[in-house]
Image 1 (cartoon, rainbow, N blue to C red):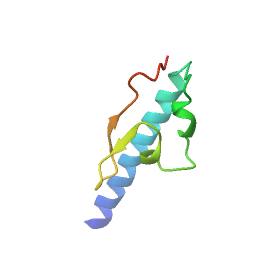
Image 2 (tube, rainbow, N blue to C red):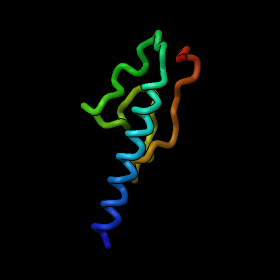
Image 3 (cartoon, rainbow, N blue to C red):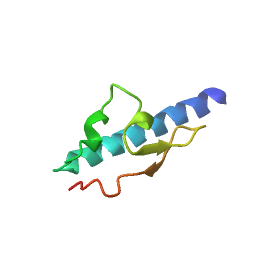
Length: 70
């Protein structure tokens, strides 16, 4: 059962990362380079403006207010 829970958590993390990367593909202007570290070389929980839950490492908040993204 633990393996199934672990696999589900990993899938959820991949889904969160995919959704965030999809979001970046829609951004045409990022004047403050907020999304500069949004890539797969680091955990998405360490990306600028992203807050994750401690236990499941799921995205809970995006703090992108007044960053002038378009």
